[in-house]
Image (tube, rainbow, N blue to C red):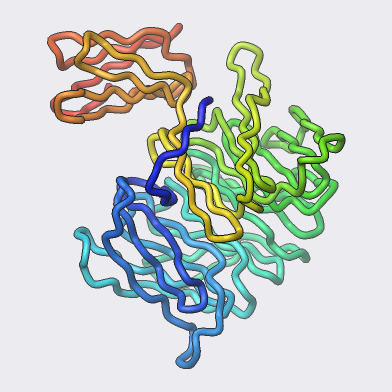
Length: 375
């Protein structure tokens, strides 16, 4: 996968909204559109009336980007309603007050009315927006350092200060929710993400891929590389087939080899004076990656396997082997072809300048560039 810097530098989130937090002491959240243009801003609120002496620990958009959850060190999670248009009034629609500082927060894709967050005391909780009440998913005795949902939002994993990795699967019809300790990592697992596998990394210069039951799939050891420092964060692309892991002055990229079902190290992107990478986020279609660093630098990268033109009228952007963005060059209309089974898209044709047909080894993908509907 190739990463090319794009300016202006802004981080990406789901859908068409971009997010930047500027000037942490004043706790101002600034919103940008997908082209990097500043469009809106608002001020966060403290848990109690008084000075804003808290730190924003994490932020997460709802699946439709209409709401924003903000986790704060003053023991509270606020959910803000952003509105449908730029400039709409921002209002708090939910709040979850806790007895311990919130340390991590995610909003799973398939849970539009639930946020999941971790506490310094070791609990992992869920905030139910409809009832405005929190509930405990499971309890541990160790500080929660990271939480990640899987790509379809049906489960989460949490990493803890003692090295333990816990997996939680949400309840399905006919079954109940389940929490399982799946692994014990040899160092503090600050970098955690769940895609095709679960990737974990920390300060031992190793990147480890686990299966969902905690079995080690592959380990990349950089202990002999003096340029490799502590791994700090990780993020899978939307298909779960590529992952970026942040380090010092660099980030490492890995891609799943569909033919061998193993992970390949596809390279290190070095950025002098970037310092520690503290945040990573992918655009919802996987075409761009946002990288935030300790010094406040925010870079946006164009990420794809390859691009090609079709009859001079269309552009195909392969963001992974199983997902292709088809764009009409005349007006910018786009449709995303994605194999739900993870099959490689080997061929794409367009008929009557409208109907898109994608071939995989086992399936056909159909799309309509006018109605933007997919089979």
